[in-house]
Length: 129
Image (cartoon, rainbow, N blue to C red):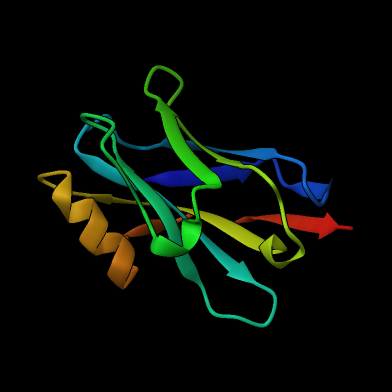
């Protein structure tokens, strides 16, 4: 069973940066799409970014606006999401997700349709001005 544990959330100042971490366990397969989703206050869950663990190919939702960077450390079984120039509308829950995939292009599709088999419980970010 794949398990995902997010951390790194908290209260941050607008304009600042934060890096979220997602530690995954339960698989040693390199062919996984790892992703970050978020659920802003009053809105539904939306995809932010995804990365293919085999070759680190990354895809971003158009709404990411260039402020989000997804990365990974395969030795530590960890995926990161860095968010810069935080805005009040970034406030919400951030979730890590994972699903097995045969190629990196599948990650973009999975992100668009929120088609991930495993989900973490989330970590909260509160952006204050």
